[in-house]
Image (cartoon, rainbow over all chains, first blue to last red; front, side):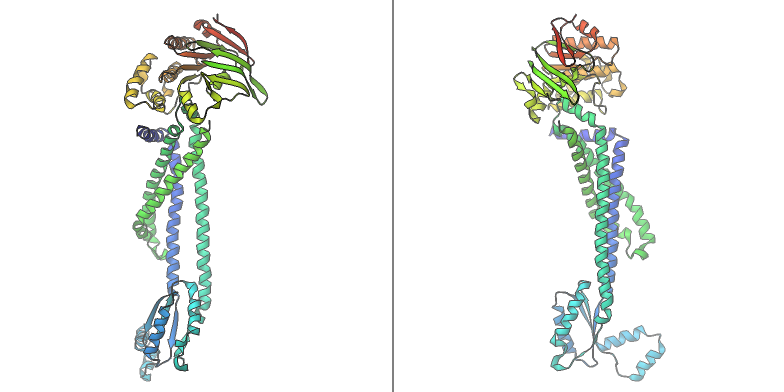
Length: 305
Length: 222
């Protein structure tokens, strides 16, 4: 217990007395953590945008005029049983007419034409959303094969707009896949680069203490007694850098939230605050692990004797 | 206490030690003299297992020091106090902390540290410099601090490798007096130097090294 207390105290003293060298290490860890935070925020933007685009994609089944609601409901419930389907919403012919009128309320000739017809010229329709963009194909195939579409030999389906959407859906599929792969590769690359830079900086701070380590060993200090304070220093680098990064990103995200919300489609400041504790935990953990492992590896070389 | 048995050490293109054989008895004060590069430092590093011999064996009592595992080596080094020409103090620690570190290394309690450190600093006349860092002290003061650190854990052996190498005559005299006092209290001392004056003021056994060989071993180095 005393040893542990001494090691912790030694780490703090080292940090304080190494002065500018300690702060150089903190700075580098801060840069690493900032890269990680930026990646987290970018992922949020990417995720949000992709979700929004995905949400705009759907398949609609238009039914013939006069198709019985009962048959449509049978189809609806069998569609809902498909694992790929997220939601199916039913719009009746009357509802469709109301929406149409609303949308064209300032388009006088169209409304007048509608009034002259008297009857409802629109059919009911089902709007289907899949869980993943890539699953629309399966849903379309299901609709082709399912008998419920043609009960009694007579089709109630007027048209399915999947084939009109197919090109868009396919292209979107490629873009989403590509964006996710690119995001992953960029994340991996930047993390690797910053980790290497941090490791080298910490190695440098320990290189400066090389002589000291030799002296400690000659005085009869155990490996843990020599290594401990350096690892505590590593922890301190991580903790201090986490604090600096978290504070640094407050004004940055506030600015992004104020002036970039429309462009990004998401308010960065709100997102940052709402996931503050997750980001805090991720940064703290990465910072400490980075500091401790770098110190451990760097000092190993001088402890061999 | 220490037995060198036909110890040799070859570096790539130089011979540092060549068939060195001698014995050190407990309580002895041995000076090892020779020019720079005669092998003095290599010889004392052998005792600490900081260097490995190309041939021969080095025993500390019944222990072959080069056969020790890490943990045992740490234990051995705790029985030996070392003083170097360049002091080898911990630059980021005060005088007090430098000595406290050596005590912590062997697991002394906080109470022992608080009572022993001021005592040993008084012994080497550094009571005033308790909270000074090494760079705030003169060469002589730093070397006295190094000696205080070497003796704090009551080692059986003190190795002083050129302790006066970078000191003026007055400080050199003081250091030699302190080492003699330590020897009088029963601790074995091995001192290396290239300074004839130091040998004469010690007036004890002297081994002369030349090109890695023992060329003389006299009872009184006058």
